[in-house]
Length: 488
Image (cartoon, rainbow, N blue to C red; front, side):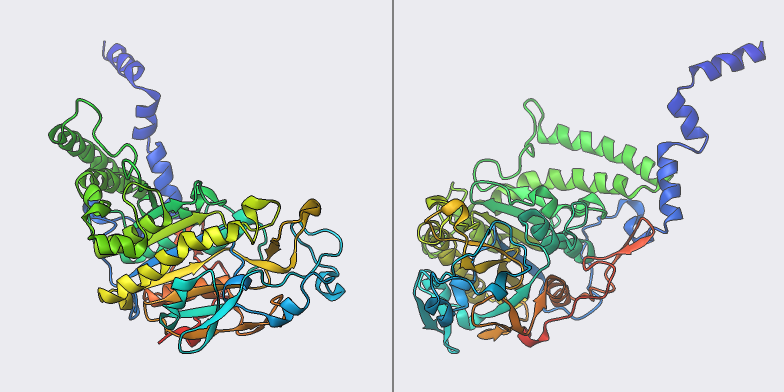
């Protein structure tokens, strides 16, 4: 009889129950894998503690938040703030063979023509920086920014180049710099995401959603994409028939189950799941208020050129300021449409380029001014730039008569403001044609190292144990340096 009962008990066991009780369940396998690879204990908050709780950086920090303005498609900064008189002299003359011999370009074929600046430049600021006439508002803030003319990268296709800038790896799967920032510092507002992403220009950046992925970091540090029209975060509202009280009871029950699982298996993603459910619940109340720019006075809306209800770059810049005010750690803006090849009227230097400049010029300047007048610029690092540069030659793809520039990794420009960056500074230089860096080279690793340094981190020491390696934003080699020439 006892043997019969034992047989019935064994038959009633599911395969999952057997595997779990046998110590080889999926959770146990995951835990053993983590232990084998030496996962950091700090990645497993005890007792379901909030993984986004505020943390002190290991070094003195100049910035507590970052607003990164990425111009997706790579703007021709040669035509914005790197004026080259020699290029105008050689306009539409054959390109010197030395510039193309043995070189690879994305689209240029044969012998291209040199291309001068199609728009005029004016001097601005105390240092007399030459700025394109299409950026009159930027001229008003040049004494607040550090212009870097000597950026360089080793990627010349959009998606890999964008991934390299924002995740430190040209392939998808690594953690975005915003994820690193929230992993290292947490968030100052427990009711909002620590890392927010805002898009404009009509589509996602070429690198896609991998640009704000948490990669190998716990997924609680992933960027949260928000919208400026309609519901800010899709599916955050309660479904029809569910009240806020019933949602609270549901989450409490789920939290108990997840805490049991976390205690038994120690999987960091279980802790992440608890934190994400709770954050989503709190965001239902906090997000609508934080994203409501109608609360701003008219003179501020006019200052940015913001119009409530639009999905514009101007609205996103104003939202970025509001989010920093509300304690969000890292705000990433992507504005698509800067791929100025000159294949037609929709992507050329004479028609499309001025349009894109108008899209961002007023709002960028307003953001810097607004942060300064509120006493927030000193603690907020603003970064502006694309993923690579543009050739000093006209592309003329397929015989196009429109003016445009091909991809060019050798050199390009960026600017930074606030967060301990000196204003009115121009760093680095390119040659007389804007083809190569000749002074003060700044690599993508240098840029990443400098951003982390301003947040209080040594990029060589900020790491996360994964697959047996100490993963870092700057990769396995000690390549990055802090660009101290632009720091106060």
